[in-house]
Image (cartoon, rainbow, N blue to C red; front, top):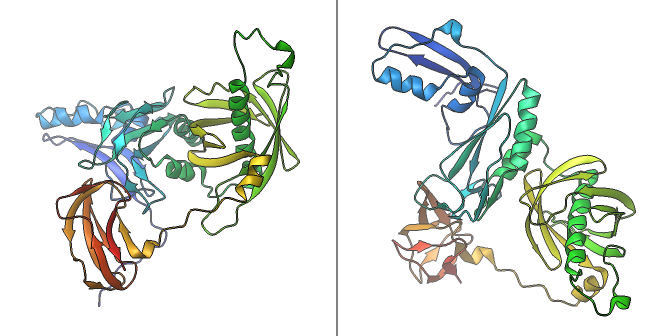
Length: 400
């Protein structure tokens, strides 16, 4: 019998210490590290923020044989600090499977109380061979709420394109809310439709146009009517919203009506900016346009990407006659969950396998992933061999 001590609601507290070989030692206050993964340690930047002490420099000095040049009574405690470890991981896939690719757009947040410890830049490659850590994002403030508000704002202004990242998870932790309330749904629909209407109106402007002036209608004076669909959980019915957008006195002011409810949106709607700070019903909202195409716009709200369908009313009527693409039987295939290298292939064509049996082992970013059969059946095809490098979502094994 194995008996373990049970601790109800435990907390992970770390204490940073410094000591030299001359008998001097001191501690630099404590860190609360309960919300973390994979036994991550010694998050020294937050301690440096509240003490003003360069811990790495002190470690190098004592390792060289010098005495500590500070005493315990010289260690201050100034304000609060938070750290978010920004990773190239998909929080919605296996609770954080790594993502690889090139950072074709990368802008770190900056400002008072913000520190970014990173070793990458725009154009850097996140490969399968190293840890997918992008940055240690640290914020500091005079009190807890100030530091937390700064972290929230910093995450909203962090621009990462080219790889999936865990900012949605970090933002949820900071916000401590999981689902959008109806008021927040109206907010997201409101500014997303406003940006989409702004895109359409701008596309209808012809510069240096001198002919047919009498037939030209100013696109900022007409109403735009849409049917909007927000993303839903798997298995939930799609919810459609009737939305009308009308520009105000200037092109950066819109009144958006969502199912009869009014949402006022204003601010600089320059679609080329990395981040946009708008006012929605006179409250500030920071967002990013991740992607935009005909009938669809993807925006970030509180760090989470929302792919929103914004369709003209007549287009919705036509879509009713479009056949849905058949879904793949996921129990009959083994897909690579991320890019990586094949370490083991445990089956061959014709083998009988049981549900849950390990078929393939992949390795990426210092982690091995065991891939299992989704059902009992016969192996129809094996599309990889040991040593192969594969991309994300590649069919590795097929079952009959």
